[in-house]
Length: 275
Image 1: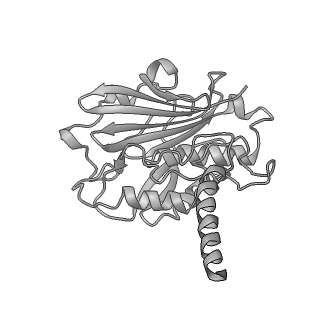
Image 2: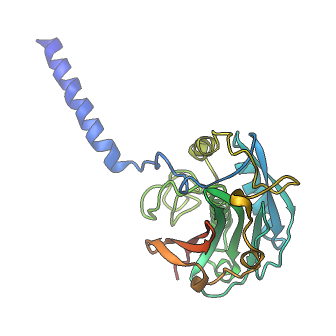
Image 3: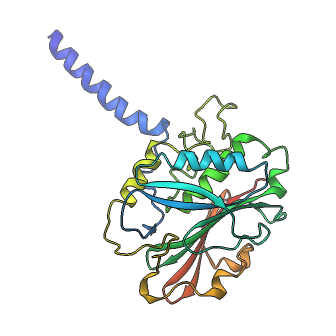
């Protein structure tokens, strides 16, 4: 009888645990790939150049971001001299330009854009808006680490692990939060990338059958026999009117898609500033 009682008690405890844990504990998205978009390449690991167009105050944060993402087994990043004016922060084929500037009270704190040809990323930009980062609310190492890490992560083909600001931190910069350091609510820091991000990158870049590369090099090329046109590369895509149709907006983040023709698209992810 005692053994029977213990058996049934164990079953009750098991089902209670299964029912309760998912409700209280935040769970990372099992797949946070950004639509399957990826850089074309012929081998792993590969190296993506991060163009440094940052002021001196932002450079240490880019160093941290670059080092963290380079922990991935499939990609490395290399900080190189920037190739654009931060005010415009125009894209350079085959790499990622990273910029900061007082872009104005336009509603966005950080922005990431990738240019797509078919399913392949051909170039990207990351911008951080000093109009908001000059304010006490955002002028902290935690917010700067979170935003720069997340926006650069988008340019690799990563989506968010979680998009709720009110639940517990997952311990990754690919998770939205109102407490990036974790110190206010005594929780995990969301300033850096984590193992789940690296696992997702390994999944995105598992295949090696692209047959060409869109990464900046002497052999880089674009699919479909053409690159993104010069006019598109040199355009200014800072403002909402240039981003195309809104795919989603939850009041904290938004995603836009612009059709550039000839199987090319521009995607824009923004982190919205909370005034």
